[in-house]
Image (cartoon, rainbow, N blue to C red; front, top):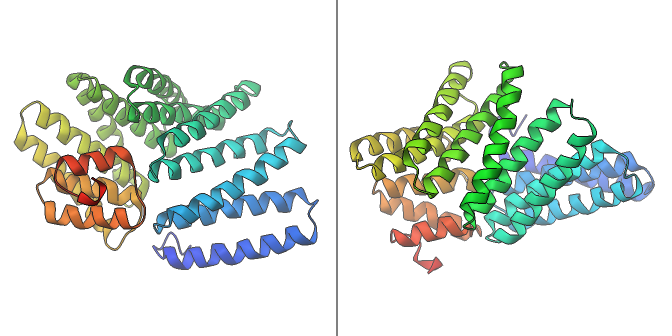
Length: 322
């Protein structure tokens, strides 16, 4: 409840308190597998909470603790598909934080483990639509990770496969809002991949599909924070594409719209998912002094995502990273 209300510090305090209780229970009965799983899941909640308040290093420690517990549980009960699925989720979270800390190879390894495990559980039960959705998004994450390391063509193969998977699911159930948002993420990811290889027309087509999905979502719930983040990144992409097509006025319109989504949620934030796109848009809008302030905030909390640092350096922002 506190997290939904925006009190991230209060929520984190509660998560840590519950973690202490879980640790005590496990110490009293180490053979209780349910308590061990609850402890692992609480490490995940603490890790996510720490990431949102900018404590990336400690977030990684909690995700590593979560991964260790779940790996041990699965070694004892390899037939448990639900635990195997949760192990994949642990690898996803570790991939996200390793990426933020600048270790793209470690991030890719975790995203690949996530994909491998999710593929295995989906093959065991192809009718499980939740697992199918997880598989589609795992492929997209692997694709984006490959793109960040220069493997554009292989990245596009993974992203297109993920897009096809989530498209099939949304066709089955158009009312599923999470899948609709995931579909928007998939189209935006495809657009970014196509941008990297210079296919600007196809990239813009993908971005426009994402925008249409997101605008429909905002008609239902304009406060959906996850959709706000996707929308801001999609509009940033549209701005870059318009700029490369020598349509500077249209580019600025897209970046201003992106800023309109980000500014209300960015005040005092230390969440890298908010601050990274905010700094990029500020740079595009030539608001370099403000961009420098945001980039410095990211640097101070340990954010070292290489594509972000390179972009800042190219534009004379964040000289510490040089």
